[in-house]
Each structure stands twice: as C-alpha cells, then as structure tokens.
Amino acid sequence: MAEVHAVKDKETISLISHLLTIRFSKQMSLIWQLGINTALRISDLLSIKFSDINDNRLTIRESKTGKVASIALNDKALALIKDIKAQFPGHQFVFQSYRSRYAQSSAPKPLSRRAVSNALDQIGQEVRLRLGTHSMRKTRGYHLYRETGDIARVMKMLRHSSEAQTLRYIGITQDEIDNDFRELVL
Image (cartoon, rainbow, N blue to C red):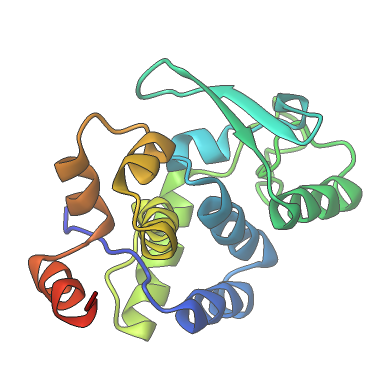
C-alpha cells in the first residue's frame, strides 16, 4: 500500500471536495469534508451514527484503539451533519449506504471503506497527489500544526503516542523544518 499525503494547500482541499461531488457523489464530498473536520480514521468516520452526536459533540469508541473519542464539532461539521440528517431523516448512520438494491431489505450499514478509498485514489490521480482515506486525518493534523506550531497539540488530537510519529504522519519533512529555522528570525 502506497503512503498517502496530507493536502497542504487549502484551495486543493476545496477542489477535491468539488471533484468528489461531480465525479462521484455529494456523499463522497461530505465524507471528505467531515473527515478533514474531525480527523477520525475512516472506519470510525463511516461508523458514526446520528445517535453518537449530542450537544454539538461526537462521542464514539475508536475501532483501532478501543479508546473513547469525544470530539467537539465545529460549525462546519455541525452544518454538514444537520444537512445530511435533513436529507435522510430515516437513516441511522451519517454516511449510510443507500444505493444498493439490497439496502432497503437489509439492516442499515455505512458506506464501505473501499468505495471511499477508490474515490479518493481516482481524485488523487486527477490532482496529482497521493490521496487515500488517511489523507483527511493527515490534512487536519498538518493544518493544525501549521497554524499553531504545537506538535503536542496535534499529537493529542490524532491520539498518537509520540511527536516523531505525528510529524512523520502529517508529512512535516526535514526540509520544511530547516526552512522554518531559516525564515523565523528573532
């Protein structure tokens, strides 16, 4: 599996959202948008139920770590979820699969990780970036680090165990660190 990257340019983040809408579906674009606003792993993002959201907070048990994640949702994330709920009031999952011919006769289930991965891979080829399901999480971490410079804060948000792991994960390279030292003159 090839390593995927954070999207470092905010205009490209918007372009990816637009391309997901026109090439795939509005639902794929919403997954992208909510993913970069929550920094959840794809398995956790797709498993969000409307019942997991109370008082502008999302509370779920992470499938990878078993830890409880309690995330204060920002205004954009709340608006996205509200719009999805208004469009699909009978859905259990925020990203419920509804296109399958079996969807009406079986228990509700979320969209598959594979579908999201394929969509991001194809859009990544179009914008010439290595995109995958981790790109949403990496993008959020990268931009938080760029805005705050606080790697410990990013590490906590991503629930990582070391700063080195977090720097590697969000794609902060030695060249970027060297450039920061050159540009910041006190």
